[in-house]
Amino acid sequence: MQRKIRFNKAPLLGDDLIYVEQAIKSGLTFGDGTLTREVESILQDQFDDAAGILLTSSCTHALEIIAILLDLNKDDEIIVPSFTFCSTASAFMMQGAKIIFADSEIPTMNIDPQSIENLITPNTKAIVVVHYGGLGCKMEKIMNIAKENNLIVIEDNAHGFFGSMNQKQLGSFGDFSTLSFHGTKNISCGEGGALIVNNDRFLDRARVVREKGTNRFNFKSGKIKKYEWIDLGSSYLMSEISAGILKKQLLNSNKIQMGRKIIWMRYLNALSEWAEENDITLPSKPHNYTHAYHAFHMIFPSFETTKSFLKYMEDLGIEAISHYVPLHNAPIVLQTEKRTKELNLCPNSSIYSDRLVRLPLYYGLELSSVDYVIEKVLSFVVEKQKSKF
Image 1 (cartoon, rainbow, N blue to C red):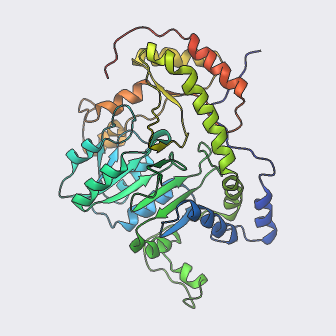
Image 2: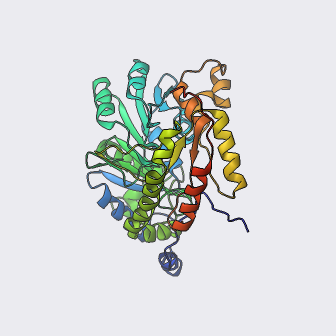
Protein backbone atom coordinates (compact mmCIF):
# COMPACT_ATOMS: atom_id res chain seq x y z
CA MET A 1 0.00 0.00 0.00
CA GLN A 2 1.38 3.41 -1.00
CA ARG A 3 2.23 5.54 2.00
CA LYS A 4 0.76 9.01 2.39
CA ILE A 5 3.08 11.65 3.79
CA ARG A 6 1.39 14.91 4.64
CA PHE A 7 3.08 18.26 4.14
CA ASN A 8 2.16 19.59 7.57
CA LYS A 9 0.57 18.66 10.89
CA ALA A 10 0.22 20.78 14.01
CA PRO A 11 2.44 19.58 16.89
CA LEU A 12 0.94 17.06 19.30
CA LEU A 13 2.67 16.80 22.66
CA GLY A 14 0.35 14.73 24.84
CA ASP A 15 -2.03 16.27 27.35
CA ASP A 16 -2.39 19.16 24.89
CA LEU A 17 -5.66 20.45 26.34
CA ILE A 18 -4.66 20.65 29.99
CA TYR A 19 -4.77 24.46 30.06
CA VAL A 20 -7.89 24.59 27.90
CA GLU A 21 -9.67 22.53 30.54
CA GLN A 22 -8.40 25.00 33.12
CA ALA A 23 -9.96 27.88 31.19
CA ILE A 24 -13.29 26.11 30.73
CA LYS A 25 -13.54 25.15 34.40
CA SER A 26 -12.81 28.73 35.43
CA GLY A 27 -15.65 29.94 33.22
CA LEU A 28 -13.37 32.59 31.68
CA THR A 29 -12.93 31.60 28.05
CA PHE A 30 -13.02 35.04 26.39
CA GLY A 31 -9.89 37.06 25.67
CA ASP A 32 -7.38 38.87 27.88
CA GLY A 33 -7.72 36.60 30.88
CA THR A 34 -5.20 34.75 33.04
CA LEU A 35 -3.94 32.45 30.28
CA THR A 36 -3.53 35.34 27.85
CA ARG A 37 -1.35 37.16 30.36
CA GLU A 38 0.67 34.01 31.07
CA VAL A 39 1.34 33.40 27.39
CA GLU A 40 2.25 37.06 26.82
CA SER A 41 4.72 36.72 29.71
CA ILE A 42 6.31 33.64 28.10
CA LEU A 43 6.67 35.55 24.84
CA GLN A 44 8.10 38.55 26.70
CA ASP A 45 10.93 36.27 27.88
CA GLN A 46 11.70 35.57 24.21
CA PHE A 47 11.53 39.26 23.26
CA ASP A 48 12.82 40.77 26.46
CA ASP A 49 13.47 44.21 24.99
CA ALA A 50 9.92 44.60 23.64
CA ALA A 51 7.80 47.38 25.13
CA GLY A 52 4.81 45.02 25.15
CA ILE A 53 3.33 41.89 23.60
CA LEU A 54 -0.34 41.48 22.78
CA LEU A 55 -1.92 38.18 21.79
CA THR A 56 -4.27 38.48 18.82
CA SER A 57 -6.72 36.25 17.00
CA SER A 58 -4.35 35.98 14.01
CA CYS A 59 -1.14 37.35 12.55
CA THR A 60 -3.33 39.14 9.99
CA HIS A 61 -5.12 40.96 12.80
CA ALA A 62 -1.81 41.93 14.38
CA LEU A 63 -0.83 43.53 11.06
CA GLU A 64 -4.20 45.29 10.88
CA ILE A 65 -3.62 46.80 14.33
CA ILE A 66 -0.30 48.18 13.12
CA ALA A 67 -1.96 49.64 10.03
CA ILE A 68 -4.48 51.48 12.22
CA LEU A 69 -1.71 52.76 14.49
CA LEU A 70 0.11 54.31 11.52
CA ASP A 71 -2.84 56.63 10.68
CA LEU A 72 -2.47 55.94 6.96
CA ASN A 73 -3.98 57.91 4.10
CA LYS A 74 -4.19 57.50 0.33
CA ASP A 75 -0.87 59.27 -0.27
CA ASP A 76 1.11 57.05 2.09
CA GLU A 77 3.22 54.29 0.55
CA ILE A 78 4.12 51.02 2.28
CA ILE A 79 6.96 48.95 0.83
CA VAL A 80 6.13 45.24 1.02
CA PRO A 81 7.79 42.15 -0.52
CA SER A 82 5.93 40.80 -3.52
CA PHE A 83 6.77 37.23 -2.49
CA THR A 84 4.64 36.90 0.63
CA PHE A 85 1.15 36.01 1.82
CA CYS A 86 -1.56 38.53 0.96
CA SER A 87 -2.12 39.60 4.58
CA THR A 88 1.27 41.32 4.59
CA ALA A 89 -0.10 43.80 2.06
CA SER A 90 -3.87 43.75 2.56
CA ALA A 91 -3.70 44.95 6.18
CA PHE A 92 -2.25 48.27 4.98
CA MET A 93 -4.29 48.48 1.80
CA MET A 94 -7.46 48.24 3.91
CA GLN A 95 -6.41 51.44 5.68
CA GLY A 96 -6.06 53.29 2.37
CA ALA A 97 -2.31 53.15 1.81
CA LYS A 98 -0.66 52.46 -1.52
CA ILE A 99 1.30 49.22 -1.56
CA ILE A 100 4.70 49.32 -3.27
CA PHE A 101 6.08 45.87 -4.04
CA ALA A 102 9.78 45.13 -3.60
CA ASP A 103 11.56 42.24 -5.28
CA SER A 104 13.25 39.26 -3.62
CA GLU A 105 16.97 38.86 -3.32
CA ILE A 106 18.84 35.81 -4.61
CA PRO A 107 19.08 33.20 -3.15
CA THR A 108 17.26 33.84 0.17
CA MET A 109 13.88 34.94 -1.27
CA ASN A 110 13.78 37.67 1.37
CA ILE A 111 13.08 41.29 0.48
CA ASP A 112 16.03 42.85 -1.34
CA PRO A 113 17.46 45.90 0.49
CA GLN A 114 18.55 47.41 -2.83
CA SER A 115 15.00 47.09 -4.14
CA ILE A 116 13.77 48.89 -1.01
CA GLU A 117 16.19 51.78 -1.55
CA ASN A 118 15.14 52.13 -5.17
CA LEU A 119 11.45 52.38 -4.20
CA ILE A 120 11.62 55.02 -1.46
CA THR A 121 9.85 58.30 -2.22
CA PRO A 122 8.79 61.28 -0.09
CA ASN A 123 5.47 59.44 0.44
CA THR A 124 7.03 56.26 1.84
CA LYS A 125 5.90 55.69 5.42
CA ALA A 126 6.96 52.16 6.32
CA ILE A 127 8.85 49.04 5.24
CA VAL A 128 7.44 45.58 5.88
CA VAL A 129 9.82 42.61 5.80
CA VAL A 130 9.11 38.86 5.89
CA HIS A 131 11.71 36.38 7.14
CA TYR A 132 10.96 33.80 4.48
CA GLY A 133 11.07 30.16 5.53
CA GLY A 134 12.73 31.05 8.82
CA LEU A 135 15.87 32.81 7.54
CA GLY A 136 16.23 36.41 8.63
CA CYS A 137 16.33 39.36 6.24
CA LYS A 138 19.36 41.65 6.18
CA MET A 139 17.95 43.61 9.08
CA GLU A 140 20.97 45.74 9.93
CA LYS A 141 21.08 47.13 6.41
CA ILE A 142 17.29 47.55 6.29
CA MET A 143 17.25 49.35 9.64
CA ASN A 144 19.95 51.74 8.40
CA ILE A 145 17.87 52.49 5.29
CA ALA A 146 14.84 53.14 7.50
CA LYS A 147 16.77 55.40 9.86
CA GLU A 148 18.19 57.46 6.99
CA ASN A 149 14.68 57.99 5.62
CA ASN A 150 12.74 58.24 8.92
CA LEU A 151 10.62 55.16 8.17
CA ILE A 152 8.74 52.69 10.36
CA VAL A 153 9.91 49.06 10.08
CA ILE A 154 7.51 46.15 10.54
CA GLU A 155 8.68 42.54 10.71
CA ASP A 156 6.10 40.02 9.55
CA ASN A 157 7.71 37.26 11.60
CA ALA A 158 5.19 34.52 10.80
CA HIS A 159 8.04 32.27 9.59
CA GLY A 160 10.89 33.52 11.75
CA PHE A 161 9.86 32.82 15.36
CA PHE A 162 12.96 31.46 17.22
CA GLY A 163 15.27 32.57 14.42
CA SER A 164 17.99 35.15 15.01
CA MET A 165 20.64 37.25 13.30
CA ASN A 166 23.90 38.09 15.07
CA GLN A 167 22.34 36.61 18.23
CA LYS A 168 19.40 39.03 18.10
CA GLN A 169 15.92 37.54 17.82
CA LEU A 170 14.05 38.02 14.57
CA GLY A 171 11.09 40.21 15.46
CA SER A 172 13.09 42.49 17.73
CA PHE A 173 14.66 44.78 15.10
CA GLY A 174 11.70 46.81 13.84
CA ASP A 175 9.23 49.17 15.49
CA PHE A 176 6.75 46.29 15.37
CA SER A 177 6.71 42.61 14.59
CA THR A 178 4.00 39.99 14.32
CA LEU A 179 3.82 36.27 15.01
CA SER A 180 1.53 33.61 13.57
CA PHE A 181 0.23 30.59 15.44
CA HIS A 182 -1.74 29.27 12.49
CA GLY A 183 -1.99 25.50 12.02
CA THR A 184 0.86 25.58 9.48
CA LYS A 185 3.36 27.28 11.81
CA ASN A 186 6.03 25.84 14.13
CA ILE A 187 3.97 26.75 17.20
CA SER A 188 0.23 26.51 16.67
CA CYS A 189 -3.12 26.97 18.35
CA GLY A 190 -5.06 26.53 15.10
CA GLU A 191 -5.63 30.25 14.53
CA GLY A 192 -3.79 32.91 16.45
CA GLY A 193 -1.10 35.54 16.44
CA ALA A 194 0.74 38.14 18.45
CA LEU A 195 1.72 41.77 18.08
CA ILE A 196 5.16 42.68 19.40
CA VAL A 197 5.49 46.40 20.06
CA ASN A 198 9.16 47.40 20.18
CA ASN A 199 8.51 51.15 19.90
CA ASP A 200 6.92 52.08 23.22
CA ARG A 201 5.17 55.19 21.88
CA PHE A 202 2.63 52.92 20.17
CA LEU A 203 1.90 50.52 23.05
CA ASP A 204 -0.98 52.26 24.86
CA ARG A 205 -2.91 52.88 21.66
CA ALA A 206 -2.24 49.32 20.46
CA ARG A 207 -4.07 48.04 23.55
CA VAL A 208 -7.02 50.28 22.72
CA VAL A 209 -7.17 49.17 19.08
CA ARG A 210 -7.03 45.50 20.09
CA GLU A 211 -9.99 46.03 22.45
CA LYS A 212 -12.43 47.31 19.78
CA GLY A 213 -11.23 50.89 20.21
CA THR A 214 -12.07 51.03 23.92
CA ASN A 215 -9.95 51.80 26.97
CA ARG A 216 -11.01 48.54 28.61
CA PHE A 217 -7.39 47.70 29.48
CA ASN A 218 -7.27 50.73 31.80
CA PHE A 219 -10.61 49.72 33.26
CA LYS A 220 -9.36 46.20 34.04
CA SER A 221 -6.19 47.71 35.49
CA GLY A 222 -8.27 49.85 37.85
CA LYS A 223 -7.21 53.14 36.32
CA ILE A 224 -10.75 54.22 35.33
CA LYS A 225 -14.23 53.40 36.65
CA LYS A 226 -15.87 52.81 33.25
CA TYR A 227 -14.43 52.10 29.85
CA GLU A 228 -15.48 53.99 26.74
CA TRP A 229 -15.15 53.83 22.95
CA ILE A 230 -12.30 56.25 22.21
CA ASP A 231 -10.62 55.14 18.96
CA LEU A 232 -10.80 52.88 15.92
CA GLY A 233 -10.40 49.18 16.60
CA SER A 234 -11.92 45.75 16.31
CA SER A 235 -12.25 42.42 18.10
CA TYR A 236 -8.62 41.36 17.86
CA LEU A 237 -8.29 39.42 21.12
CA MET A 238 -7.27 35.77 21.26
CA SER A 239 -9.66 33.60 23.29
CA GLU A 240 -8.49 31.93 26.49
CA ILE A 241 -9.11 28.54 24.87
CA SER A 242 -6.61 29.30 22.12
CA ALA A 243 -4.21 30.77 24.66
CA GLY A 244 -4.44 27.51 26.62
CA ILE A 245 -3.37 25.48 23.60
CA LEU A 246 -0.62 27.99 22.90
CA LYS A 247 0.74 27.85 26.44
CA LYS A 248 1.32 24.10 26.18
CA GLN A 249 3.09 24.56 22.84
CA LEU A 250 5.33 27.38 24.04
CA LEU A 251 6.38 25.49 27.16
CA ASN A 252 7.58 22.73 24.83
CA SER A 253 9.03 25.00 22.16
CA ASN A 254 12.62 23.75 22.56
CA LYS A 255 11.45 20.18 21.94
CA ILE A 256 9.40 21.23 18.91
CA GLN A 257 12.22 23.29 17.42
CA MET A 258 14.79 20.53 17.91
CA GLY A 259 12.48 18.05 16.15
CA ARG A 260 12.11 20.40 13.19
CA LYS A 261 15.84 21.14 13.07
CA ILE A 262 16.70 17.43 12.87
CA ILE A 263 14.40 16.99 9.86
CA TRP A 264 15.57 20.21 8.18
CA MET A 265 19.24 19.28 8.55
CA ARG A 266 18.56 15.71 7.38
CA TYR A 267 17.12 17.09 4.14
CA LEU A 268 19.98 19.57 3.69
CA ASN A 269 22.76 17.03 4.28
CA ALA A 270 21.20 14.34 2.11
CA LEU A 271 20.20 16.54 -0.82
CA SER A 272 23.05 19.07 -1.12
CA GLU A 273 25.23 17.11 -3.54
CA TRP A 274 22.24 16.08 -5.71
CA ALA A 275 20.98 19.65 -5.76
CA GLU A 276 24.34 21.08 -6.83
CA GLU A 277 24.64 18.52 -9.62
CA ASN A 278 21.18 19.43 -10.92
CA ASP A 279 21.30 23.24 -10.60
CA ILE A 280 18.77 23.22 -7.75
CA THR A 281 18.96 25.80 -4.95
CA LEU A 282 18.43 24.67 -1.35
CA PRO A 283 17.95 26.94 1.69
CA SER A 284 21.01 28.84 2.85
CA LYS A 285 22.24 28.88 6.44
CA PRO A 286 24.71 31.76 6.96
CA HIS A 287 27.01 31.38 9.95
CA ASN A 288 25.72 34.46 11.79
CA TYR A 289 22.05 33.41 11.50
CA THR A 290 20.00 30.95 13.52
CA HIS A 291 17.37 29.43 11.26
CA ALA A 292 13.80 29.05 12.55
CA TYR A 293 13.36 25.82 10.51
CA HIS A 294 9.91 26.81 9.32
CA ALA A 295 10.24 25.45 5.78
CA PHE A 296 12.60 23.41 3.65
CA HIS A 297 12.41 24.41 0.03
CA MET A 298 14.01 23.61 -3.31
CA ILE A 299 14.20 25.96 -6.29
CA PHE A 300 14.27 24.12 -9.62
CA PRO A 301 15.92 25.40 -12.82
CA SER A 302 12.63 25.74 -14.72
CA PHE A 303 8.86 25.93 -14.33
CA GLU A 304 8.44 22.77 -16.41
CA THR A 305 10.75 20.75 -14.15
CA THR A 306 8.94 22.07 -11.08
CA LYS A 307 5.57 20.93 -12.46
CA SER A 308 7.01 17.50 -13.29
CA PHE A 309 8.46 17.15 -9.79
CA LEU A 310 5.20 18.11 -8.08
CA LYS A 311 3.28 15.55 -10.17
CA TYR A 312 5.95 12.91 -9.46
CA MET A 313 5.66 13.47 -5.69
CA GLU A 314 1.86 13.52 -5.82
CA ASP A 315 1.86 10.14 -7.56
CA LEU A 316 4.06 8.79 -4.75
CA GLY A 317 1.68 10.02 -2.05
CA ILE A 318 4.05 12.75 -0.82
CA GLU A 319 2.58 16.21 -0.23
CA ALA A 320 5.21 18.55 -1.65
CA ILE A 321 3.74 21.95 -2.47
CA SER A 322 4.65 25.28 -4.05
CA HIS A 323 4.04 28.66 -2.45
CA TYR A 324 2.86 32.21 -3.11
CA VAL A 325 1.64 33.75 -6.33
CA PRO A 326 3.53 37.08 -6.46
CA LEU A 327 1.38 39.87 -5.05
CA HIS A 328 2.46 42.46 -7.61
CA ASN A 329 0.54 40.44 -10.23
CA ALA A 330 -2.42 39.55 -7.99
CA PRO A 331 -5.85 40.22 -9.54
CA ILE A 332 -6.79 42.84 -6.93
CA VAL A 333 -3.55 44.74 -7.58
CA LEU A 334 -3.94 44.62 -11.36
CA GLN A 335 -7.56 45.74 -11.05
CA THR A 336 -6.92 48.49 -8.50
CA GLU A 337 -3.87 49.94 -10.24
CA LYS A 338 -5.08 49.22 -13.77
CA ARG A 339 -1.83 47.45 -14.57
CA THR A 340 -1.14 44.53 -16.86
CA LYS A 341 0.79 41.39 -16.05
CA GLU A 342 3.37 42.39 -18.64
CA LEU A 343 4.46 45.16 -16.28
CA ASN A 344 6.62 42.78 -14.26
CA LEU A 345 8.36 44.86 -11.62
CA CYS A 346 9.58 41.97 -9.44
CA PRO A 347 11.18 39.36 -11.71
CA ASN A 348 12.88 37.37 -8.97
CA SER A 349 9.68 36.86 -6.99
CA SER A 350 7.99 35.60 -10.16
CA ILE A 351 10.80 33.10 -10.74
CA TYR A 352 10.55 31.86 -7.16
CA SER A 353 6.79 31.46 -7.49
CA ASP A 354 7.25 29.35 -10.63
CA ARG A 355 10.09 27.16 -9.40
CA LEU A 356 9.79 26.69 -5.64
CA VAL A 357 8.75 23.43 -3.94
CA ARG A 358 8.52 22.80 -0.18
CA LEU A 359 9.03 19.34 1.33
CA PRO A 360 7.07 17.87 4.26
CA LEU A 361 8.30 19.28 7.56
CA TYR A 362 6.60 19.15 10.95
CA TYR A 363 7.25 18.07 14.52
CA GLY A 364 6.35 14.39 14.79
CA LEU A 365 7.20 13.49 11.18
CA GLU A 366 8.91 10.11 11.50
CA LEU A 367 12.49 9.95 10.28
CA SER A 368 11.65 6.85 8.24
CA SER A 369 9.18 9.03 6.33
CA VAL A 370 11.81 11.75 5.93
CA ASP A 371 14.22 9.17 4.51
CA TYR A 372 11.51 7.94 2.13
CA VAL A 373 11.00 11.50 0.87
CA ILE A 374 14.76 11.89 0.42
CA GLU A 375 14.99 8.58 -1.45
CA LYS A 376 12.29 9.64 -3.88
CA VAL A 377 13.73 13.13 -4.38
CA LEU A 378 17.11 11.62 -5.24
CA SER A 379 15.40 9.30 -7.73
CA PHE A 380 13.84 12.19 -9.65
CA VAL A 381 15.58 12.83 -12.95
CA VAL A 382 16.08 16.55 -13.55
CA GLU A 383 16.08 17.64 -17.16
CA LYS A 384 19.33 19.46 -17.71
CA GLN A 385 18.90 23.08 -18.63
CA LYS A 386 20.59 26.33 -17.78
CA SER A 387 19.05 28.27 -14.91
CA LYS A 388 18.04 31.88 -15.49
CA PHE A 389 19.43 32.91 -12.12
